[in-house]
Image (cartoon, rainbow, N blue to C red):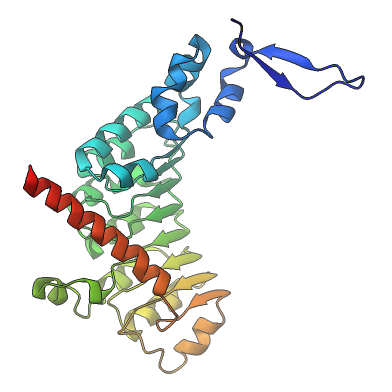
Length: 294
């Protein structure tokens, strides 16, 4: 049976019909990318040869957003395997990668793919990933084209990883570095790690002057680190400081922050943020229980 799609209508009400198989792969990809990634990988290729070719080719993967899929699986190895597979299919043309719980191997693979000598990656969103400082420093130069970066809740990344990124990503304009609320970290070791620490704020201030959007919810820096950021990053239009308990906004800091178009103070209501982190924490506990059962 022929698979046909109906597009628009003529002036006299005559509808033109075009076989799906005759669609340009790039046009077909614009339609297929709206389908959830699991269905796109498992079901769509079985429909017909042209659909298989479109999914197997690079046009469906210029933007790779598998964060929802990653949240359901919550397994570093599976996430790394999927990301490698899709980045390979993009043939280096991937402009956006959004994944959750990405590991070192998946990150390194994605960072080092390029298209005919040109690196295309612009947006890298990897919240709650297992990427380490060592890997971030090693491959930071490969991220030179990145303009948007989300490394929220990545506990293995510290000021060293952020500094390496800042030095290499000269076009970086958006950074998300939100961290878990202190009250959700139950162990004494975790509370010790959450002591006052200006190093991340200073790394951002010293290496990322072009930022216009910055999210640092539950950061451990004080007015000193914030002042350095405001002094060096003077193009900010968004600044999120929700839950930054060491920030008091003394002196001229509060007035300076209030001039930012979208500013969220440390004491801004953050119920939704806590709920989101608590949900993620529950998922971690469930995974640990499953591992124990195994």
